[in-house]
Length: 351
Ligand code: EPU
Image 1 (cartoon, rainbow, N blue to C red):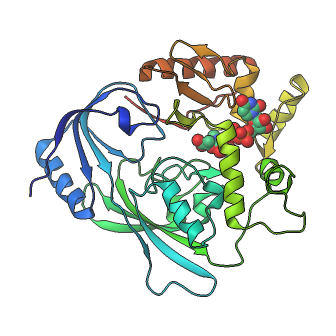
Image 2: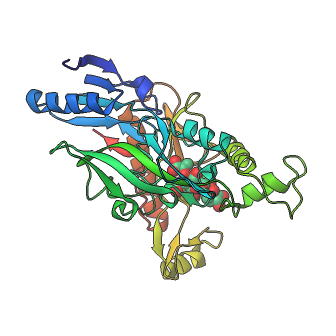
């Protein structure tokens, strides 16, 4: 059957910034076969551009979209045959599954590895694009391989972890192979026991061991459920819920700079925060830089930098994508003027 493409669909429910723009053409696909059919049609119809939409939690639409938006809703969580032993299991997850739903599934089954990535918005298929990460864990730690369709040849193939070229908020899918593949599913290698826990973040430690929260004994090893609870509590206290205030999480990446440049900056700004990535490279939290420039909690028209986390730009109402992007550029400029540092968007700007 020929896929039914819808016309002039509002993208407001499909992006967490809540930008009200329109897709000239729109289709949702629920299976790989449906997707292949749509790709055949794309060849005949010659749309000016194609955009693959996951959870819409990391994009900012600047204008109406003239081409075809394909919403990837391919679902399913399966055990991969002959991969399970006493310690580990491999799961194959459809790209359209909601990321946090998958985290909850793993917690219910006591599969460890992604508990620190609780409550991250978006879909499983979008997660490898930018190598989602939080509280010391990145998805690249657990991805075995990624299943894709080559957009040109329509061939289905696997990209193994090493080939994904994962880095800080980056991968081959975001850079070298941008627009080459459509991710249709991801295989994860998870633990069933002897979970590899990461509780190094101060805020996680506080939640686990403070009297007014979980109050564990300092020698008690937390469960993956308890770590997830800690992460959820931290995220809820700092990050605005996109269902209440439109946003796309961190708008910028934290700049990674030569450590000697960091030392120079420290002389001028003694309270500057930095984390060593290696002996030569230091990561500076962009949230701190933005706050120092006076943006934290500031409201500019319909937008602003959030009051609890300056790195998160928000839509207070009917902001257009352009309005948020203009604010982002002003913020970039002021950070550059004060610190001489370039902060780059983490969000994909479409327009
Ligand atoms: N900070 C400020 N002012 C602010 C915000 C932060 O001074 O307004 C300082 C904090 O005090 C802290 C440091 O910056 O010393 C780091 O802050 P935080 O722990 O909140 O983390 P982040 O570096 O701002 C990154 C990720 C988040 C992830 C957290 C936790 C990026 C771009 N962002 O934020 O990811 O949840 O670490 O691991 O790397 C996302 O990508 O959308 C996202 C939310």
